[in-house]
Length: 99
Image (cartoon, rainbow, N blue to C red; front, side, top):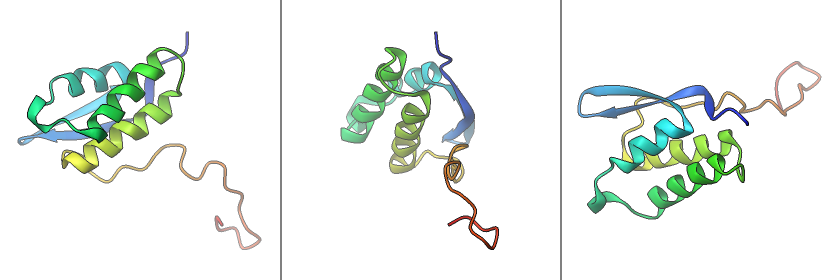
């Protein structure tokens, strides 16, 4: 069974409280508590992505990115999120900088 833990937690804020969401399951708990009146297409995408990751049809990182997108659009992302895998597939250029 693959791990459903995020490589880096997603920090979200509710009121003045910050929460570190560290796994697909924690993201689903957070999403399930989201007010029904504020649910929309991005919310639905995040829920489907988390469920797909649990079913092994999507990677944990893909589900994490869907949750980050939801949090950003919903205005609850506590800080700028940088994927732990962002740029991992980029090769350094001759100058040593990423392309």
